[in-house]
Image 1 (cartoon, rainbow, N blue to C red):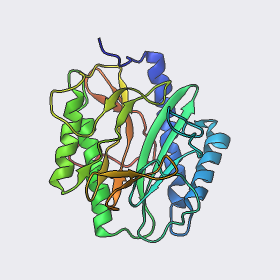
Image 2: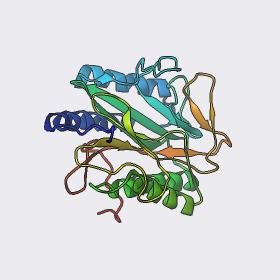
Image 3: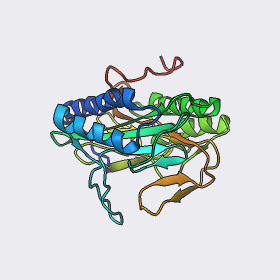
Image 4: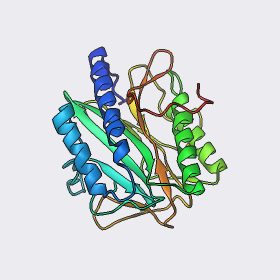
Amino acid sequence: MSSISIKTAEDIAGMRIAGKLASEVLDYITPFVKVGVTTGELDRLCHEYMSNVQGTIPAPLNYCPPGYTPYPKAICTSVNDVICHGIPGDKVLKNGDVVNLDITVIKDGYHGDTSRMFYAGEPSIMAKRLGDITYECMWLGIAKIKPGAHLGDIGYVIQQHAEKAGYSVVREFCGHGIGKVFHEEPQVLHYGRPGTLEKLEAGMIFTVEPMINAGRRDIREMGDGWTIRTKDRSLSAQWEHTVLVTETGYEILTKSDGTPPPPAFIA
């Protein structure tokens, strides 16, 4: 018996709204991600937009899983060698910096969760390639989603694509089920073997959010209890969508006018 919840039509409608709103925060913040801005300013702008324009609640703010201190900000800003959960603050973006902005909003009790990569100024060829390959990894994983497929199918194609490019896949963090709860079953690993782990059914909703490192996959946790960096200080990239399993395949729930299109090979 699977512990993965199957969402009702009402849940799915709520998740579509929350997902679109999360994506619209990324649309809104895009022009502000440039050289000279602080990550704290990006957080302030997003928080104000959520509260004043959307009437959404930032899910990360004061989020406190067991064993953690409450997360102090509205969004996550992970710059360069930060893999995930970078806390916004005084860090000023310099030319060539790469930053992942991870947004989760709550609307009418439902969570919308998505992230994109941004570049301040002109990224290096290496940084741009890492961002592009990571985006392709996410989409290759999403393209495997349909009833009867397995979670292992998603992880396998992501791992193959990343490692073929000479990159590594972070193991300690993964995608997750989501709905009225921020993080629920299943865990969506970004590595694995085809045909393994849970079988997908229509009505499941989860995130696909590969974290790909330019160097080795080893991580280190910083003293703030949240920020995760690459151990070898290599660059890391991440993209994230929240996805619904439909009767015939999948539907991206975190979509808005500014959402980057899928890679050509997906269409």
